[in-house]
Image (cartoon, rainbow, N blue to C red; front, side, top):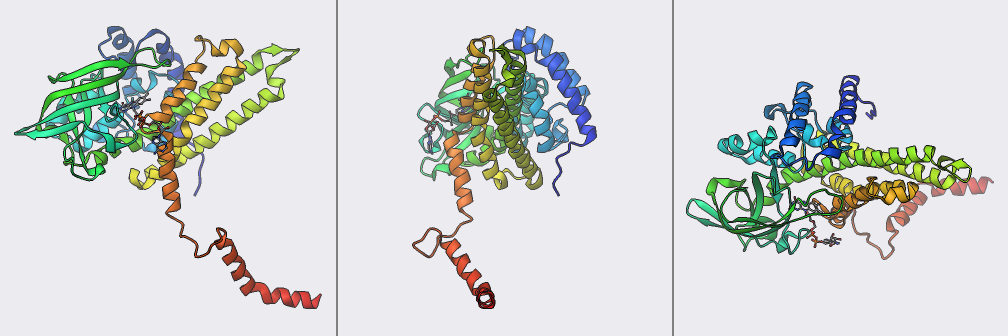
Length: 429
Ligand SMILES: Cc1cc2nc3c(=O)[nH]c(=O)nc-3n(C[C@H](O)[C@H](O)[C@H](O)COP(=O)(O)OP(=O)(O)OC[C@H]3O[C@@H](n4cnc5c(N)ncnc54)[C@H](O)[C@@H]3O)c2cc1C
């Protein structure tokens, strides 16, 4: 059964969210700093009442089940919601579903002790604190075999030494979720374990914060751990299970990035269309020029294709309730995401001329953000490999030198089955 309708009751909620984001949340992007800066009094003064309103509407932390204060709406509804939230950098924070806290909360809910849930999860869910996920290292992020940050057991503690790179929001975070090698002799994917490291633990150092042009602040930390001691129970999951634990957050996290990216890409398309019907050159509106029409049509088609892929993947997640069964689809969504955002933002930039490239318009930022989408949570290339490998699992090598073996075999079968009929027909003729 295929159904492309939103149920009317939920559509009413989406309409409310749409107006709320436009009127109350989008303006924050122009006057505030970083959404995760929970120590910024101005930010809290403006954001907290909006978060309260969202709670009142029962739309807070919709990625979580009711036991954690969410609505348990599932991924399809979340996709429809996130498309709207993605339009504003404050949207996810106002609705309690910002990355990486959303994924880190899922990890803590699955693997945290009662005490850790009280100390870290509860304030994280309330957005009184924020968190950081530290996996990538300076010598590489795409290949976990090169990770060297080490955790060694000493009595009732784990002692962590090493460096992490591009650990987003570490400067605002109350704690980090850190991947470290606990058994160097084990196979690469069983070598590492996951830890909670409170940010104020002695030996944790932010070497520097790295930024990029599209962001107002440098928020990606180069982290160093020197003899950082955490209690034994700060390991999340079993020893050697870091990748299993990471999957709890990465599957949903990648999909949620995609949902929000649809919101950004649609915003770019809106700007493109508005410009096309407004600007006149050589006696006619840009919207009357076929090359501009092509840009609009291509953008709409690419966005709608992508949106269907994302919604279908969300639907598969709801159906299987197991990210592992949807790995290929999530990787496909991840791999396709940067190009959709890049191409639509670049067309919007071009059609705005000099204004488009200026820092008064969001297009150059979004072109750069598309590279963020192509790197964070794993580079596009790695996800394409996952997609291809899973597709290839369904194929057997042909017992023939000819690559079109299956076609030849099908022709032979057809001739065997119907050949006689054709001979009769030919004789009759
Ligand atoms: C904005 C942003 C935020 C981030 N936030 C976090 C965070 O919070 N926590 C965290 O742990 N990490 C974070 N990252 C890091 C991100 O996960 C890594 O950048 C990513 O995994 C790639 O690692 P790398 O940068 O070391 O590149 P490398 O691993 O050195 O790869 C470089 C390039 O090599 C190519 N390549 C790599 N592998 C393959 C392959 N198998 N086949 C073909 N080509 C390949 C790709 O083009 C890739 O981009 C963030 C990154 C960005 C850009």
